Length: 147
Image (cartoon, rainbow, N blue to C red; front, side, top):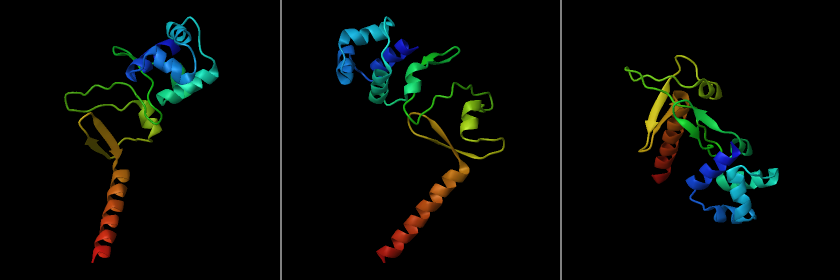
């Protein structure tokens, strides 16, 4: 697990073994042994690695995998990979239970679907509406001050 994450994260971030070893104060050979699974880093070095990669210590040592897809790299702090869903013929998906539990999503709840060029976001309608309301209030105050 750890060795796979170390290799994936290093490659995703575009570091050479030498570059990442330098960042945490060890030799390239020591780092290579971690990636090969010959040895493992101590907790302090794991903490440094997690900081360099912007992930939690827990996610550094755990591997997430989805059947039929493979192993996922650890998600950055504050980000999650909940799994893979399949869109049915009517365009419906089932949100993974972990995500439903984390965001307290229940049947019948309204979600706003947003996107950018890379993907789709689901935002609870109440939160989206509150953001829009605050934006409108800010704009109204700005217009009064401009007079």
